[in-house]
Amino acid sequence: MRLEGKSAIITGAGRGIGRAIAQKFLVEGARLVICDIVPERISRTEDELKHLGPVYALAGDVCQAEFCDQLLQKALGQFGELNILVNNAGIAVFAPFMEHSEADWDRTMAVNLKSMFLLGQRAARAMITQGKGGAIVNMASTNGLMGERDLAAYNASKAGVVMLTKTMAIELASHGIRVNCVAPGLIRTELATEGGVATSFLKDYLRKIPLRRQGLPDEVANLFVFLASDESSYITGDAIIIDGGQTSEE
Ligand SMILES: NC(=O)c1ccc[n+]([C@@H]2O[C@H](COP(=O)([O-])OP(=O)(O)OC[C@H]3O[C@@H](n4cnc5c(N)ncnc54)[C@H](O)[C@@H]3O)[C@@H](O)[C@H]2O)c1
Image 1: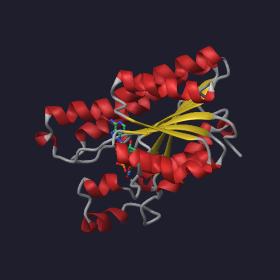
Image 2: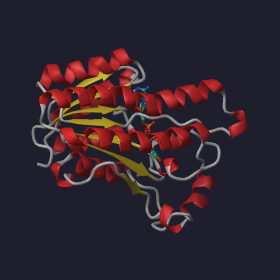
Image 3: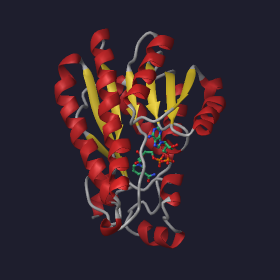
Image 4: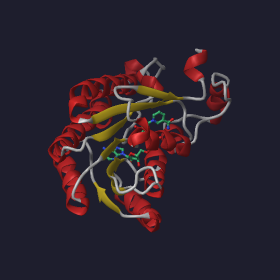
């Protein structure tokens, strides 16, 4: 098993890609603390996955420093150490730039970027104290590498994730802590459909993707397993694209 005995925190694991990451991590032998802002989502994930291995769920908002402290305390209290942090929780507000509200901007920046700073700092502190290194994998997006209309705050936040990742990687390397981010293209989850990605839009969109389909949460989760495991021991500070070839063609 590729994550045998490793202790990990995964944010936004109530559904979508975060839930898929949690499932794969358990199958690979990890011990988990998972969280989501929607209590019924995260307790359902916990119920559905607990037959696979140790998993503890907390409901709360990763933008709140106190909640980030609770996540750390839970992982250290249950498992004695923390080896992996997956910063996955994220939101997207679909609106033209001229119609983006200040509240949308602030909330998007807080959930998608500030949370990674808050939790990243806390996790790194624990890993430095333990003295055994660790792996942090942040969720970026191809939208952090190129623009897309109607997603100004989202795009800016994800570009921030890429640069936060690189800076953390440089500064934490001497402690044996690797920090990478994953940049998916269009993945089939409720995030996009709730935001109004209609079937007609999708048909046009798929023409831009050489593999001619959306990615699946499990395919993204495989990459998180790799980046969290010792198999990627010489990779740090990178943003790994998983997009069916979309950014290559464009
Ligand atoms: N689906 C895609 O096409 C796609 C593409 C690129 C990147 N991403 C990124 O992947 C991540 C997961 O996306 P998804 O498609 O699985 O979305 P999703 O909406 O299905 O799942 C995200 C989960 O995060 C939770 N969450 C939101 N705000 C939170 C907060 N403040 N605290 C704790 N939990 C919170 C939500 O309740 C939800 O359960 C996001 O960061 C997203 O930006 C998604």
